[in-house]
Amino acid sequence: MIENKSLRSKIFDILNIVILIAITLICIVPVWYVLCVSLSSREAVNAGKVALWPVGFNLLSYKKIMGETAFFGSFLVSIKRVLLGTGISMVCILMAAYPLSRTKKQFPKRDIFMWIFVFCMLFNGGTVPWYITMKNYHLMDNIFGLVLGTGLQVFNVILAVNFFKNLPTELEEACFVDGGGPWRTLISIYIPLAKPMVATVALFTMVMYWNEFFQGMVLSTRQSSYPLQTYIQQMVVTLDYSTMNVDQIAQAMKLNNLSLDSAKIFIAMIPILIVYPFLQRFFVEGITLGSVKG
Image (cartoon, rainbow, N blue to C red; front, side):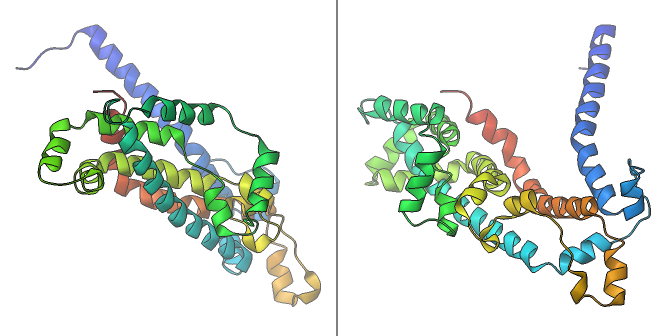
């Protein structure tokens, strides 16, 4: 049945489209501007001529980055951090969410643990006690310091708890009848059914580990230990002209710190931009199913 829309409905649809286009542009324009600056000449960037299109197009900034071992060293640190951190966090989140999603009859102390989790999400001991703890555990300049220092993300645990609560209890009962215990129920039934939630939480965790820079500043005493975002936040381009030949000096004179910074920032976006499309189909379903209690 085809329903003719009223004038109000058509106006509402048009306003929605306009608003969504505006939001899309607000999200895309800054990224596009960073790319344009990274591809523009030094003179154009210094003069503020770059807007929405590269001026004096060149790839000098990217060629310079390709020769920086410190940048790619930090890039590798971030890759390790994301892989280790996401893996460890997902194990902890799923193991915490499953018992917290059970009834009080199955897990009498559930509410106590849930309040502890929520309290820790709202309040923390502060940066100084956290730093002393990390130092006493010898996690300075250590990849596991960057991974474990973030702690358990309680928001993701709550998301997983609500998702597990929406799954039919008959599945768990059937598993128990067949001789399976809690571990078998979680691994063989709940986790396979929770792919949308797992993908959503994994994406949140990956983005969090990739973008976090403060802990790298506090826990790293050497530049070689910096994750990528910390390196970008602290980077200052220094050129030693005494070790350069004439051609290298001529190339260096064409470089601009802002262009180099923009190129590094754009390269830092690429991994998340590559991963997101593969998880996007689970994203909306994971948020929807995990946001309402059954």
